[in-house]
Image 1 (cartoon, rainbow, N blue to C red):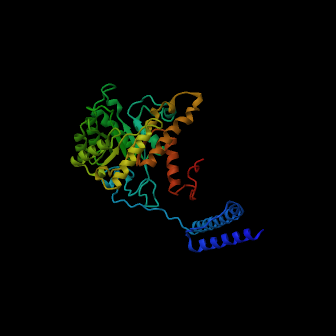
Image 2 (cartoon, one colour):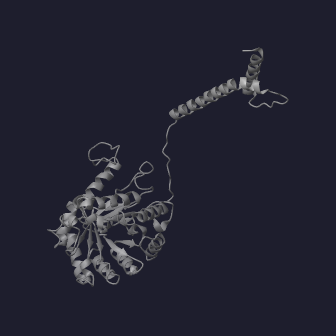
Image 3 (tube, rainbow, N blue to C red):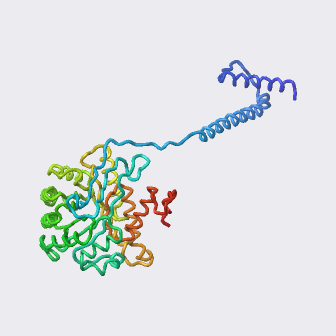
Length: 400
């Protein structure tokens, strides 16, 4: 290396050292010839690259060290509101004849956020029965066909399958079917109450004119039992239903078809009629898996969050008839490409139930006994109360 090259390199080194010390430098009146630039450009690039790499490595090392030392803290949300607690059924000391009562609601956080607040009550499961035999999906019917002629025996059967509540549907009262009178339907209610000691949900046929009359007769014979009347709607005589619920000490389901504003309106109307929040359940409509369930998820989450945020007109537990899953043809239709119906149907109802469970559902009206068994086990596992006696870390595959 010649003297000229050596001096150039020394100059560059001095300039670089100066730049490192002062971070910025402005150079003027300096002339560098092309042949000199060619000689020094390589050392400059090499030096700059090495410096950048060293500084980058130091930054990365500092970040890694910082991550190792950091601790994760679960963000805790505190809500100003609380979902009302609804007591279903009444024991002898409370004026009824039920062996026990079940409670729904009472939470002050979203579903299963037990790291924020304790979950006061586990979800409640009802299984549907009917006052007359009717056409059911084959995979459901095989469990009940020997008792479908007797609602009282049917009720005993579903209690054996794990039902916390019996959901009795008086469909024979429909004027387009048997047109059974309200007084005759009330006798069925009495028989079921005598057959089992769990609480009841009592529903009509869906006829807007006749249902309030049927529910009035049912409410009278079930006085003191604190049953659930299914249901009050904006287009039926909700005032009569609210009146008999107050008179005989029952609970009313407020049903609306997937509209949070109408749900809020109906709830407020029932409260105006004198029903307390503790005597109202919300049924905002439950769609089947694959058939609009995304709307149901969104609606239930909005209702639950609104209640927790302080909206008193939406602070009631949510009831979900997940037996609606059997309305999806994929649950019952014979199709070899879809897999065996023996598994497909129960799975369709179970996944529907699990979806609503995580969206805000508190009470479930179901059909297939396997659905109740699987979901109850899963709830215990999520809450680390597994019957296996050990905490479950991977609850997604816990039931496998």
